[in-house]
Length: 66
Image 1 (cartoon, helix red, strand yellow):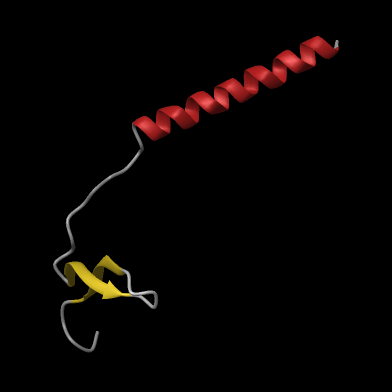
Image 2 (cartoon, helix red, strand yellow):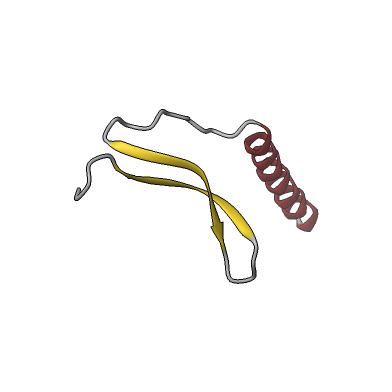
């Protein structure tokens, strides 16, 4: 009986590992364009406290005050 429970746990772990590997190789991602009412600034440099420069994407309303 213990061997059957162990096999069941191993099988469940292998199924989970398989799903994670599949999602790693082919993630479920949908890429869309920026909506017309949003302004996008791409790859803006931002310097952080330790002096490292990070590149960020900033999305903001296209019209000021919105």
